[in-house]
Image 1 (cartoon, rainbow, N blue to C red):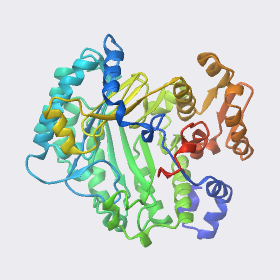
Image 2 (cartoon, helix red, strand yellow):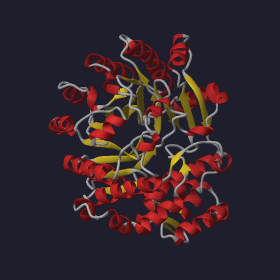
Image 3 (cartoon, rainbow, N blue to C red):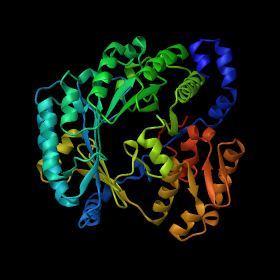
Image 4 (cartoon, helix red, strand yellow):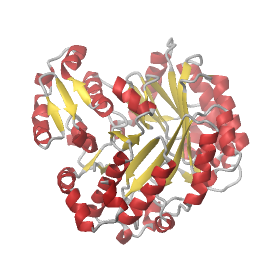
Amino acid sequence: MASLLQDRVPERQVEDAFATELALARKYAGQGPRYTSYPTAPQFHTDFCQAGQDWLQAESAHSHAPLSLYVHLPFCNDICYYCGCNKIVTRQPGAARAYLDRLEKEIVATAAAVGSRRPVTQMHWGGGTPTYLDGAEITELMHVLASNFRLLDKGYREYSIEIDPRSVTAGTIPLLKGIGFNRISLGIQDFDPLVQKAINRLQPFATIAPLVESIRTHGFRSLSFDLIYGLPHQDRQSMADTLDKVIALRPDRIACYNYAHLPDRFPSQRAIDRLSLPEPEEKLLLQLLLSHRLTDAGYVHIGMDHYVLPTDELAQAQREGRLRRNFQGYSLHLADDLVGLGVSAISEVGDTYLQNVRDLEQYYARIDAGQVPAERGIRLGAEDRLRRHVIMTLICELRLDTAECGSLFGLDFREHFGRELQALAPLEADGLLHVGEHEIVIHEQGRPFLRNICMIFDAYLPHQAGTRFSATV
């Protein structure tokens, strides 16, 4: 398939080469959750707040188990038109200072609630743009975290940070390595100048290549790229050129996201000319080109939208059953509990999900009043725990031992999920998976359709007709 891209053969030949996959993509195209949790965020409710905080503390009170931290830093210097993240675009002096002051108060209170001596095996800073903070502020925040949580200086830890390449200086990379980060994620999206201009994110390849070299030189354990397909002015030629550059830089992990154009929900997307977006059929072809080119280049499609080098720890973890999916996507399973800090951040502790308020002023008001900033959440029941196990196991391990699952939850799997197994039959007929007597196995051809498969086991989905999700394919 690489030759189809490299030789720039006629479009008809590309379409013919993808005929079978394209037919499947058309058949299963739709909308659905990304399953970074189950139940998914639309099931969280506001009357859960105080109970959720109490349960979170109770489940953590005497725990010495490892902990994962997520820190949300919402600020950006410039707006990227495509973005659907919870962010605040500002160049106002003091914006970071006001936020860090409140965040420190939340850190102190949260550490007291969930256990300050639990080893933090994983930490992720996301946003927004974490490197909106200057070097002193980054160092200060890490010091606050280290003063209240038990951060580790161990080789197995996974401390990662998202970077907007436009927001770094020559001293940023060594600083991040020096204070403890060992993984970096770069928001690339696309290398084509016309696409970058259309989404207001100008970052030429000539500036990215030296940044990648600096990351390699300073010994970070892994480098991730985020790519998006379906952006304005993208076509097969521009996608092929972008992939040439990406593969030349050889990141360890690549996340490829499907752009969802929802201008009513995300006002910044109104700046994108709808007529410049690829047609649905072209978008499917872009996704297929992307997938084939990356696998031809040696990347492993571990599921959903993620491709990794076979030597990467995520690939190894999947083979060994140690892969996990949470609100940051795929990661190593180094901790059961995840604590979110900052505006809109989500915690997952035991059977409790709890999300902070999404509005910055409300976040400030609650912190200033000495209140917890949590706004909504959910406590999982027995059926939720069962279905979470099924969905997350399929997503991470690409197979489910149904006999083991039945034993674990005290039920007859085939009887309990009779309707779901019947619904899987057409997908099995299309070669996406195999339903055996004691297992469900996702085939290579089924990996792009993992969300469709998991949706069959989602008990809430039939009642969410008005909820808008991103495209499944």
